[in-house]
Figure: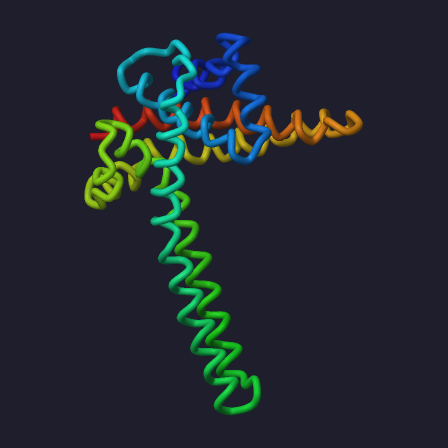
Length: 213
């Protein structure tokens, strides 16, 4: 899949400088960056429809960005449940025995390890969760577990995911040069990373989602 698909995804954020600058600006602010999350999903949708042109900015981006956040939070809930269960068990044991035993430490470590492993799995499948929602813009499709597992656990998606992780590291490193600019450097770096990775990532994931049957 490399070559053309990756090249298009990497260059896509820079197609239209007006859209690019607006995206960078919106990415800086905590509430306004919800527009960027929704815009990224629109980029994925247009990729699924074989359109590489950047979509227009609309108010609907905010609604879709909110849906992105809601779906993400729901998928993260099991992590909180695991940590609460093991944390609660450890806390109760500490109260009962008035001490912190090796067994309690073991309990706590098991909870942390399970929580981390669960978080890694969820972070891995989350892009395909979003693509499943984007395909028909139906909330329930984000929880079609059978389809999401099929789309996530295959070599094509694994390749795209790992390359995108590498790209995240690269872009984060490159944009560090802006941090040296007094006062506004951190904001510029944050805006660039936010918009570039959102557009490129959703383009890649939209592409591989349609390829994996």
